[in-house]
Image (cartoon, rainbow, N blue to C red; front, side, top):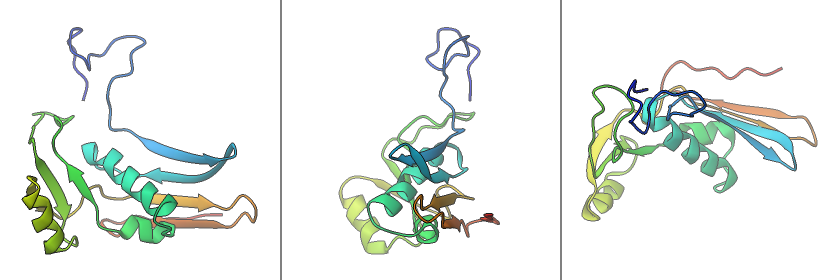
Length: 149
């Protein structure tokens, strides 16, 4: 993902934070950790994590529902990995997204590509700070497990 070219925006240099896809999220409420989100999948990671976060915080899904919900991912950014492919206007949709939705997005100008998964192996964990109850969701897109104690 990194460039050994000092003039490149993603060049590897001391004190610099180059773009990387190694990301996970910790959500806090009133300064207390209440949720985590993580999803392998290269450049689809940030997009999958945001969708799962919105599924819980905005759409009221539990962690398992949030992980299992179909996802999408834009390919309109230069890929982080060699050969750094770039597909402006392309939108990956998981197969479970209805055909009518794909058709509506295509009518808006998106180049639709159906894919098996937009990020795989996701985990969402949730902890109720008042009761201590733990909940988690594990991605059925590949063998993934959620274990708590």
